[in-house]
Length: 333
Image (cartoon, rainbow, N blue to C red; front, side, top):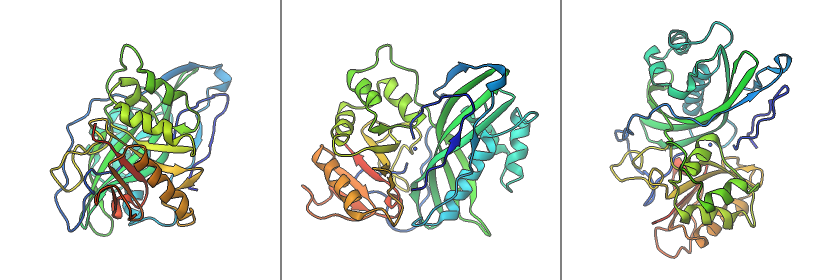
């Protein structure tokens, strides 16, 4: 399993563990121009936790590295490195100009820092931990990598815990792919009253959600069909969700077909019963069984690392390079 341990000195933070999916079968075939989501506003989920001065130490996050089974692992690594560089700094590294310098040190356009949004809180110190890096789409010369992360920032004796999901767009280049744009998640404000099903999902310990997905549920914008399916799957499985609504491309990558994710009609799962979907050592029966259970729970469009047979319709199950690292479950309403 490719999880990163975090050591937190004196700070108890319990945030969930974060897409690239399609409806109608996902992106297939040759290179196309990727679609561009609407520019997000800098929204993230944060909770301020005052702690004693002697305990205000930020977590030590291990840099994310691709494990076995990845398709084009360096593309993901390139996307993750820019998010880690933008969201992590020590004393003296605060502010946009310093962030531009960190991006430039990676050999990337420094103006990418202007698109960092919630990754640049007004704090003297911050650290990012990447939970997961998932394809939003991978074609011959372009890609979307959804970098799901937590972030902690420190101001005086206060540590603030938050995080987001960033849709990192890349294009093929030599010697490494280059980053062309950043689209942080925009989950929107919390609803005045938390919907009942959303509250049940958030309280279910067998469902682990990353910060942007938690904010999606709190906004009231996730459909009941998605929430009920999560609760149903939490009977036989424990699982970690990567993306629900925000932080995902508006359209199926490489097409002009709207994705189910921004409409709150889909969720992606990157880990099942402690096993990463992308890991070749993960039992096939475990992932395949989860896919079939998602279909039985009402998903009309289930994608994953293998094409399954026996769906209710010819298109109920699909597989492609984009979905080798997660299970996508889409719903019609």
